[in-house]
Each structure stands twice: as structure tokens, then as C-alpha cells.
Length: 224
Image (cartoon, rainbow, N blue to C red; front, side):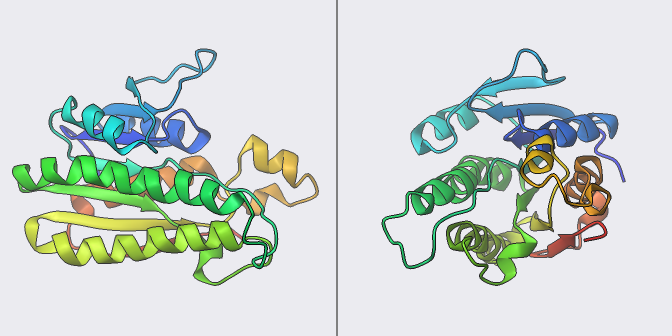
């Protein structure tokens, strides 16, 4: 597996997983461009970076128009939050979860696919969730949003597979991040998915080694 000579765009590059995907892509030989709404100067990104609000379609479109060639799009931008019960329709979590998980993915795809179609080749890797394979209590907004990302992955794959573009997604369980450790201090962290391990799978799906894989939803669960 290698990404030698490829240009990889990573959304949500300022986050823990985003940093891991950027680093692994570079190790595999890629030129990487990281996109996010802001970048933490205390933990600088070791790649080119562009600041953009990925929930804003017009702003995202303008950003992608400046990027040039895109061989791989890694849609890492997203987030999780527990919500209220499913019957509390006034819950702000619905808008929040769809905005950060669905809108960011859709807008990045909207920006990248025309570029890939013109090139006749490309790979897109989205982030679903193992927990979204079925509904979970007090997680209806998150599960629904990630389920949309997963169905979008499958639909887009069927539309683009004959045009030289691979579209797949990873389905992580709990990712080992400082935030998750704080929120679940009594958990067995050794069973969680390390960002470095998840980034390996993401980079594989973006590589030519995965050229025959279309519409896959790949579980990445560690030992959980």
C-alpha cells in the first residue's frame, strides 16, 4: 500500500483522527491538504492547510475550486454527542449532528467529485459508525446522521464506480481520543480503536490497492 504521488485532501484535519490521517498519508508518500474551520497553532498540522467552514456549501465550493488535482478525499470532519430521547423533536442535537456529519460530507463531495470526474479517477473515504447500524437509546440524532453518511456512501458508489471513482466508508467503534477517555474514564481504553490504526484503513481505501472495492462499509472495531 502506498499513496506515492497522490494529492490527498483531509477534512476535519485539525482533530485527533484528522491529524492521524494526515500523518499516515504523508508517511505513504502523499501530498496532503488539510481542511478545517480552524487550526490549533499549539499542535500545528504537518501539511498544507486551508481554513473553511465545511457546513457552508458556497464557502466549501470556493475552497475546492482553489485546490487543483484531488486524488483522494478523506471526509474525516464530523462529531458525536449524546442526545435527548427520540421523541423530543425540539432537541437541538438533530440539527447539530446532521450539520457536522452530513452537511460537511455532502459539501466536500460536491466540491471534489467534479474534479475527480474531469480527471477520470479518484477515491473518497467517508466516516460512518458501527453504532449507527441500528438505533441506540439517546443517540437517535447521531445514529440517524451517520446512517445517512453510510447510505450516501453506497449510493454515490453506485453512481461513480464505472467512472473510475471509488467510494467507501469506515465504521469505527469507539476511537481512543482524550475526549472519549475523559467522558468514559472507567472504560478499558485498550479495547478502543487507535487513531493510527483507523488511519491505516482509511489510507488503504484511498490507495490503488483498494481499486476493486466499491461501496464497502468497513468495520474497524479494535477489541470492542
